[in-house]
Every structure is written in C-alpha cells, then in structure tokens.
Image (cartoon, rainbow, N blue to C red; front, top):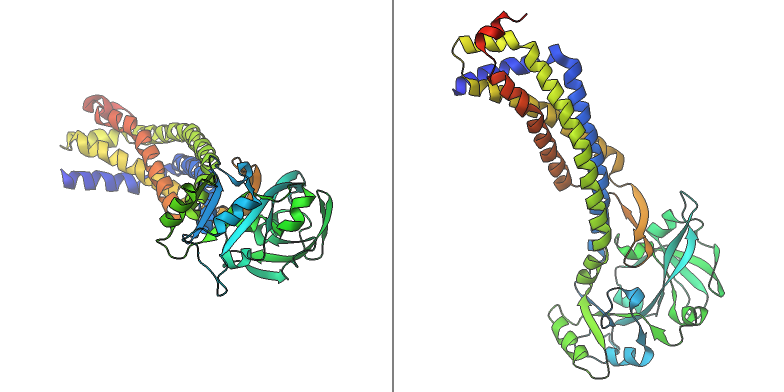
Length: 394
C-alpha cells in the first residue's frame, strides 16, 4: 500500500503545473487568510511583549486595596511614609528606602499619524524614581530639573505623538511644560509615557499631597512576601502589593482578549472562503484525472492511496500558501510601531507588531487544516468513482 500511495501521490504532484491556474487560486486564497490572521494576532503579541519588558521581578507595586490599575488607586502622603518604613525594601548607602511614590494622570495630545486626540499618560515622579527604575536612560537631551515645569518623553511616545521633541513647549492642566529629554526603558510600557516632577504635577491637577502608587525595589528576590505581609497587616494602611510582572501582565488582558477574538473571527470567516476555494481546486483536479484515477483502480490500486494522494496535494498547496502568507506578514508587519488604547488604564500604549515563530507556526497549522478540509470531499469522490463509468468519460 505504501508503494501505491507514493506512486499515486507523485503523479498528482507532477501534474500540478497542468492545473496551475486553479492551484494558484487556492494558494493565494490560503495565503490571504494567513496574512490577515498573522497581522491581527501580531498586535496582541506586540502588546504582550511590551508588557513583559515592563515586568522587573525585583520591583513591587503598592496600590490602594481593591484597585486593579493605578488610575483607580489613591494613597495619601502619610500612607506613603508608612510604606517606605516597611521591611523588605532595598535601601541606598544613606539608609533611604528605594521607593518611588508616583502620580498618574492622562492628558490629551494628538497622534502623529492621524492627528486625532489621544490619551497620553503623564507620570509624576520623585528624584528617587531613577534609582528604583534603574533601566531608564536619557537618550536625547537631559533629565528634568526637579521643581521646574519640565517633562521627559519615552522613546515610543516621541515617535507616536505630535511635537514631542526636545525643546517643545506643551500646555496641560494649568501649566506650560517644556520637554527637555527623551528616555528609553528597555522597550517597556514606560516608553509610552511622559514623566515630570510629582510636586509640580500635584498642584497642576489639584491633587494635594496624594499619590496613586508606590514602586519599591526589593531588598532581595525573596523579600516580597515579607513586604506584603508587613503592609497588609499594618492597621494604618489599606493597600495591596504585587510584583511588577504580575501587575503588568494583568494590565492588557482585556485588550489582548479583544484582539485575539477579532483575529479568530476574521480568520474563521476568511478561512471558510479559502476552504471553498480549495474544494473547487481539488474537485477540478479530480475531474481532470477521472480516467487516470479509474485506470489506476483497474490496475489494482486501492481507494486509500487515491484518497491520500488527493489529501497530500491539498495539504501541499495549503503549506505553500501558509508559508507565503506568513513571510509576507513578517516582512510587512514585524516591528511596525503604532499605538492603541489600553482599556484598563484608558490611555494610549505604544508597541510594535510582533510576528513571532510561535505565531507563524500557529498560522501554518491553520493553513494545513484548511487544506485538509478542502481536500477531504474531493478525495472521497475520487475513491468512490465507478471504474467502468470513469473509464468511459472523456
């Protein structure tokens, strides 16, 4: 049987050039499905990669208990001082806690590509923030001078929003700010933000002596539980603590779910069309070889080799289409930078499309499934052709 399968399949494959037009239609149809499928899901992969880059395992984030984002959190200045005295937090040479109390607001600013207004995160920080977020580096210009109305912008924000250049003056709240520098932070979500002095930001937005979160550098990787227990058991505080990777991993779950759901729906709808294209192609292939198949059957070839030969041809065409569509998607979208709304923080997040090997493998598997579905009914018809009737067909 194996020799029969190889013989019939090789004949089918060698005859593909004779049906080049219909075969090309099937390949292009599947390639189009894979292209769109990969393009949409690469958005979710890019957002996920940005959030993973933000999760420093040696950082803990403290917010008000019950808050799931910094936007919904609030901490009084007195509570911040109590947090800074908790055990488990790293300290510098002078004994000061390596903590960064921060204020997070959203400002309107136009996107560079469309010109439409968008929500840009503006984060107020203290001088200690640059010790806590120790990966952050100034790439252009200089750092802010504390006490002045100055901001620095993340590299991704500078590329996505209008006028975020060193020296530009920007008016938000009750202040006119001067952008003095561009920073990089390892591709993390911080690069979608603007940073300024929290003591200048508080009165500009009438926040008093309040913050929304405290980032704390851990004394050791194992000291998180000690810090968490100390904070949650302190009757002066009503806070929750989590590691930074845990927090950032939860921040785009809604966005990623929406993107993946849309991608799956589009992929299924387009896939149905591609399957019908494959069915027509393979029916054409079977019809053009009716007498050939009947002759093979009359010579003693079984129905199983005939079925498998048709399925192998369908899968081969789908693999070619899947590879072609995946390569086009990778060339066109991988690394493409854009911004979208994070529905949990109600602010823009800049990210790059990420066409990963795992995503390409998933798309190729999907194309093979389409090929099998497109070939199964023509294969069944080829196996059930009456030998005498088929030999009489022209």
